[in-house]
Length: 85
View 1 (spheres, rainbow, N blue to C red):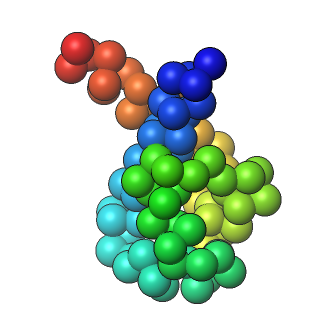
View 2: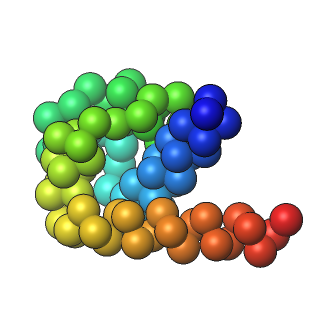
């Protein structure tokens, strides 16, 4: 169970980071737009924190995407990791 939670954090954080970087948005700007602390966003992107649904919705909104887009990217991220193994 702990492994699954860690893996889920990594996948969501990785998806948020990929979208943020693709849109050329700094962590500070995204954190401000999503009304979360910069350090918390950093922890999400580095798989140290699991964001709540509310935070995920705010991040999606700040990134200008639907929450489904983040979920879809997270799914692709899993498939890419599985293919690399």
